[in-house]
Length: 193
Image (cartoon, rainbow, N blue to C red; front, side):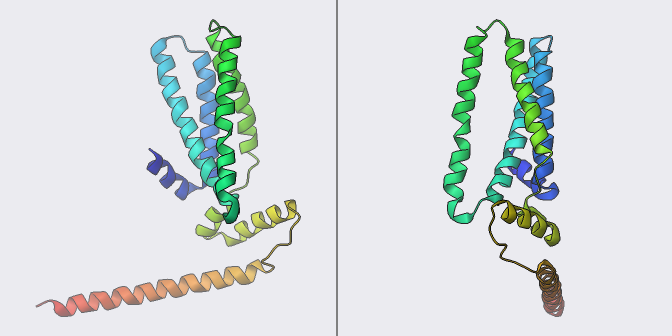
């Protein structure tokens, strides 16, 4: 499942994956609170879990791509510290509701997920994804915003020159790869009897 999710987010971007996961998890959380039978609740819980996994994979990649390389490990571990806190909160809510109000136990997280949905509407796309997909100007804009927010000088002053250099190197690579394939095909053709 993880490999499929990674392949999808490498094609469409981190932000759409996070948004889809957040909105679908919110929808399924709300529908669980309204379910009328156990099989329906079970199906909705499976779909909710898949939605959370989708959102988590997208957010993990997005978060890691914004972190500086030298402190990525500790900051990524800090992100996982939220899981025990969230589970403790869920256990406390279940105890507080005394197990008799299970619909409220499902509806409260759905309400919190609305906040996650609103936040997901404001996040920028990963600069790494944008640069890999050829949108260096977009990546440059986002990085400028990050540097401005952190009040640090931006290290690359001329995005247009960098973009032109990247396009030229990509064209050169494609030309070199095409010439290499032509040479291979000619060698194979000459070997034929």
